[in-house]
Image 1 (cartoon, helix red, strand yellow):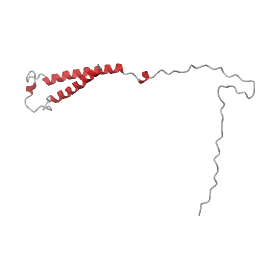
Image 2 (image 1 turned 120 degrees about the vertical axis):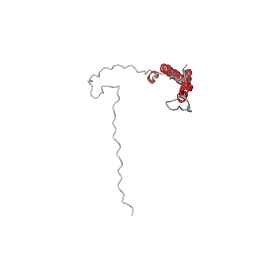
Image 3 (image 1 turned 180 degrees about the vertical axis):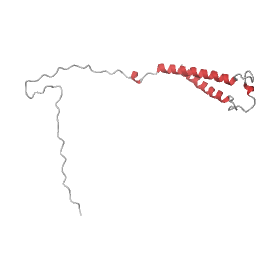
Length: 134
């Protein structure tokens, strides 16, 4: 349905462009080669709207309707990027009991965390300056 309305929308847009170019302006239109303005009027030179003017109004109405229809069709089919992401699974948080002071000296209080080991950086080798060769 969206494709059909999209094709109709493009055709109506092209027809609307042509109709606007055909119409006579206050001077001459794009294809108006001079002559009297009453020659293309439906009701003569009494000021009634010309055939091109009426067709332009109807083409503009159809263009507006297809614009609204396309926006409705595409808004219901479009989803947010967040909606398409899979739900994140997280592990349940298990509360831990607070550490109790230990009576033994030197025994670590919490066995679940590894002790941090620190290593000293390696000393850079010292290089004695050499005398420039002469």
